[in-house]
Length: 170
Image (cartoon, rainbow, N blue to C red):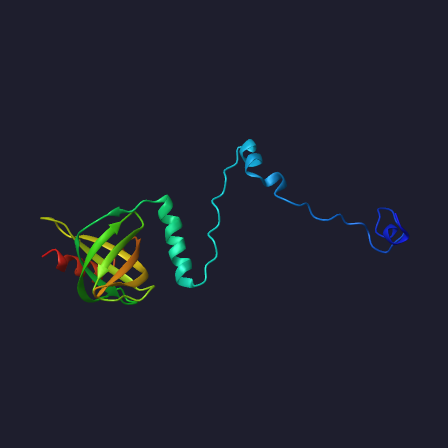
């Protein structure tokens, strides 16, 4: 060692203690090491994207990779909900896909993101099935239609919503 290196060497006479550099590479956190210990492998993080809309689509794609949505064709009545859980004007839409956590709808009316909506699904010869959710995205799909992705939430037991659902079943 040169005189300059001795001040950083362990037990050297320098004013700074020797601190080794951090380890390089994955080390003990490799997939093989986790599997030997019986640990689960975490899912890879989504790649960063350029815009917030792309981030949202990437999150939906990652979630849909785990959860499969099914094609679903049904007539719908949809209404936006205000802060007091009162439905606004009702419009017709068409369901395209459905899963346990979301429904994708084709609508002639645009919806703003983060708006609450109530949906009455009209099946053949049956009472409409009510769904409740929040709009996660709304994109123009062409031919005057919007593709609206709605995250499903538990149905609140509010009187105005129950009245709206009852009116759809008549």
